Every structure is written in structure tokens, then in C-alpha cells.
Image (cartoon, rainbow over all chains, first blue to last red; front, side, top):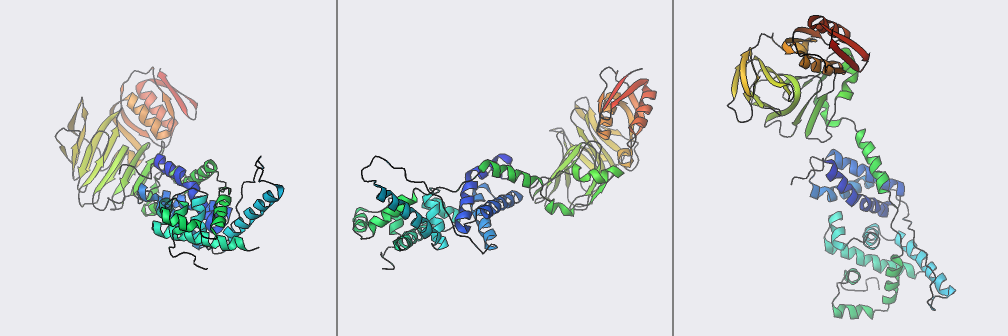
Length: 167
Length: 305
């Protein structure tokens, strides 16, 4: 109760806890890095302006709600392009050049498939796989139930299998 | 094939390791299971988008600093003095929340403004006032550091809190001087004012009366001031004021540092203007037999003649 977002230390702590997560969320939705950066800033700026009205424990849902609203004004989204770690050849006998080539191909196909996922499933999938957030943590950020997160995640995997199957 | 499972959270719970043994066995026998494994493994090689947290924080800080003043527009801001009009915006420092309001007059400036209830405040140099916009309609209460002259619209209680005491009024005109190293003086020009210092019994002042620290206690005196403090009218009238305190006031009025270590503290009585430092220094030097030197525009040295 004593903590107040208007206090610099509290505000900074919220930023450190949530800035990257918010930025990634915006990117997973829009596929636009510059936009994610700008809208993330804008969301935090609005939180600061409303610091007296928003309780610290509500900061998270406030930020994600504002970010989501801000995105509505930018209907034209880009394709989400993700980088991935290149496979390093190891001594494993299984890793023939053909195998590595296939892996690389699959990696590309997966990235393409993720970009083509329905937005809601994509956001949940990436928040879980990349940001390592639990379903409950994602639910808190998006203000939906944990069950709804699980449904979106399940759907993401069903769709990804179909999408990566295409040659 | 479009919906391979009846349970539409199954794959999600598989990933989070929340499946029962039977569910797990069932899933592992699904013909597409190897591909899901492959998808998950490949997704673990995806890289989190780059994010420069430090750079982003710096940018945010800069953006916050250049915030427009926003909701505080109801304030009617009148600067006293010509330069004040320009310096006003520098002098005004807003607390950027929507509820806590803060107005600060820097050294060398006075600021006159109107509170939400239409009460008038003249804030002396090197002083600040804060109040809570949210609770203001229920309770007229503000905090003062420094010196200010209030002309309060009659209504419910109006309280000025300072580090040295609280002043409670209904509707009146009064001045509060609160500078812990120099004193605490509450002067009533109209109506009635209640002054409460720590746990001492509260003093009631009538128009023409003044409460100040006498020794360690708050005492009552009459004052011969006119309808408002002299400092709100372009000059300050000192009455038997130790010269040390006069110099402190001058340094706030003109935004200069004044060195006066070697000056014995004689009392000064008389007016000093706010608009001409040289003039003010001439007057006080002549009266108290002092010599002054304007070292540069921010430093004045005063010695015994």
C-alpha cells in the first residue's frame, strides 16, 4: 500500500520487470520492431502520467491494456520475423550434412509458420516459448483466464504442425 | 483432422508438464507426436527479440521530462515582475502526477496563483507549495515550505501545514513565514487565524496580530503592517531584523550568494527594494556602516566599513 508508482524507484522497478516483456508482446503482435519500441515507450509514459491513479499491482495489466489499445490504431501489421540460433555441428554421428540441412530447413519453415499463425495463438506461443512466461503469467498480462491461454497454446501447436507440414 | 483432440488444452498442458500418465501415453501414440516434439525443439532455438532496456529507460526519462504541463491548466499564473513572466515556466516545477500538485518559486522570483477554490496565493522566492488535487474538494489543505501570503475564500477550514506548525483559517488574509533556520512567523491581515505549533495550545490571531517564535515558544504580538505583507508589493519592510537574516532574504530575492561572515549582526529597520540589488545594498550598507563588493553577478561580499 505504501508503494506508489509516482515514486521513481517503484516506477523504475516496474520498468525493469516489464519493459522487455511488453516490448516483445508488441513485437509478437505487430511484427514491427520500431513500432514495438515506440508503443512500449508510450505505454510507460501513460503509466507515469497516471501514476497517482494506478496501483502498483495493477501496473502490469494497465501497461498491456494500453499497449493493446495503442496497437489498434496500427492495423497494418508486418510479418513477425524471428531470428534463431544456428545449429552447431557436434560429434554426434547422427548429424550428417544432410541432417543439418534438413534441420535448418525446418527451422525456416517453423519461423514462416509462426508468422502465419492467428495472432492470438502466436502471441501466447511466443510469450511462452521465447519469454519463458508460464501460462498463469501470460494470463495475468493479457487479463484472460489461464484456461484461455492453454487453449490458444494448444491451437498454436495444432496449427504449427499443419503449417510446417506443407512442403 | 482439423481438431485432433477432444481436449483443446492437451498440447498446452503437455508442454507445461501437466498431463496425467494416461493422457501422456495417449498423446505419445498420436502419429503427429514426433512433429510436435520437433516444433518445440526448434522453437527453443528461436531468439528473444533484442531489447535495449537501458537505452529505452533513458529515452523514457527524457520523454517524461519534456511532458507538457497537462492537467494543471486551471492554475491562473501571474508572475510578479517583468522577468518573472519569462522565468515562470522554469520556476514552476510540476509534480507529474495528476493528483499531487506542486508549485515552486525559485530564488529571485515570486509567483502569484489561484487555488482550485479561488483562494489566492503569492509565493515568495525560494518557496514551494504542494497539495493534493484529489482530496482538495473535501479538505482544503496544503503544505508550505518558505513564505507565502494567502487570501483565502471563505468556506470550510483551510489549513497550511509547515515544518514548524499548522495554520488553520476559514476565510481570511494572512502570511506564513516558515524557514526553519530563520524563524516561524504567521501574520494575520484580516479575519481570524489559528496557529498550532507541535503540541502547544493553538493561538488565535485577529487582524493586526502576529505569531512568532519567541525563544522556543510561539508568542503573540501586534504588527503594524498594512493590508498585505510589504514583500508582495515590490519591497520588503524590515523591522528590527538581524542583518544576517536580512542578507539571507536578499540572497533569495536576487538569487545571489552573499558572504557576510565578518559582519556583526546589527538589527536593520527599513525597506529594501526587490528590483535593484545595488540600490538595496547601498541602503543597508549606509544604514549599518558596511562595505559591499559585487564580486560577480552571483556573489556579493559584505564587510564592516
